[in-house]
Image (cartoon, rainbow, N blue to C red; front, top):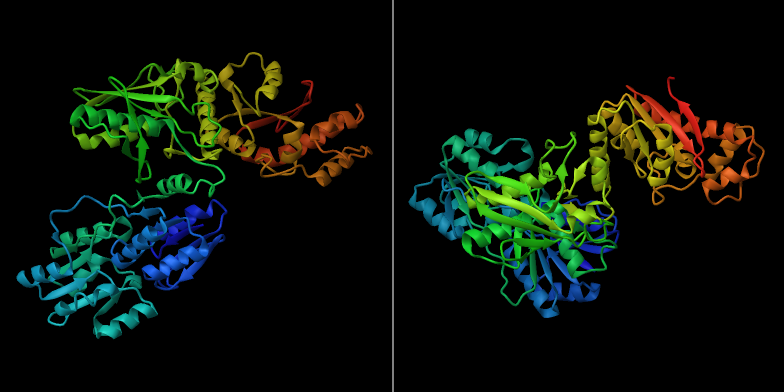
Length: 592
């Protein structure tokens, strides 16, 4: 069991991340103020000291605590660490993301130092953006000076202000739809004070508003997390890092484990190689910033003139899993990324880069460049893959006209198990190449068997004109429409066809099964009186129905498929081929 200490944006994201496992967990907050949509989580409310938290973890069988509380909730952090030490539990600290410190702000170690600096600087009118919990520590200042406090408009916050005696006519609220700059303009303070609350706390918006309005900005820096080398703490700042930490620390929580894209592996290898070149540092793992802005740690190894990452595909059925992706980095006159041994070369149009370029997609190139930018020196990065040429024969690459190795790909940087996103990206790439090939028609099919049969119908089309849709029939037709395909053929076998005829545009068995009643309806529509109530597989229809009835039944099935598919291709002509087990073809053309 996992316990999240939340009440923040990070806490809500943590809950969403655990929800995807469909496993029970607990979500604890100080009060009921934050609304969190949970199906599998149980809400706990009320403050807990170290002893109460220890008892809570023992009672509920907690194996991992996820501390997603506010960075200034110092007492809670201490209680979490103390309970974890008592019970020998691991902690995942879900941190906020922080910008580089702005030198225009006046930084303070704590509230006492902030009051000293503001007194010294003659601040007489103050707008406090530090929240209701800072009324007590800053009381000596607001009792002597005119101050306005921005708080959440909720009963607990109002009770706190009354408890310390702060004047209610000097309260302003987060929910009044007035931004910080406008509030400064209305109140004319000498300064604002805020906390280093990170991106989700709107920190930079407050600092930049002060700069624009010409008032001083005092910042109380965030406290450090109260751990030492003996504590088992993993720091993350996003959902992917949290998931991978949970997969490692509570392996049975997620039924399937995530992995890393080849782009992330190449980026990590490049970062490690650059660090060794420029700083002589050889860490066992390096930070990689993903496209969504979060940072994850990736394990690396080193060779004589390169750094490497073994590709972890998690539970995704990826033939590139286990490959060693390497990066060699050298100083250069301009930044450059090139492909080495085992990385494919583009030979056809339709990709992010022209023929002759290494098959390193746009997002991985952006990741590598962004992650090496902090070194502030031009570098040449050579990405290579041990065994990439052999493995590439089992990928889409030969059909796409990518020769000599695998592609370095990835959009999110993380491979989710049995990733729908990854497969759809492959379909889209194949569709773009099919269009770029100049073929007069694109033929989509479910796999090798159906493609072998439909190729007989179109012997003059190039290999690139045949695109595999797997189970994503509807999405593939939509991609064809987006790509401007004028002539599209859909090849489908009976198992997928009866699902498609019933309106199921995604025919994967984990999402939909054969609707036997609808199949019986189609048999009756075709004028057949055969009893098919005992079938378990759609392909049995080919043998159960009399030979003379099959053409009529096939026409009914294809007609229903056309009803659902043709509207997805409004600017093109769709042909549907129903394929029997021996390669026989039954055809229907929309708008012939």
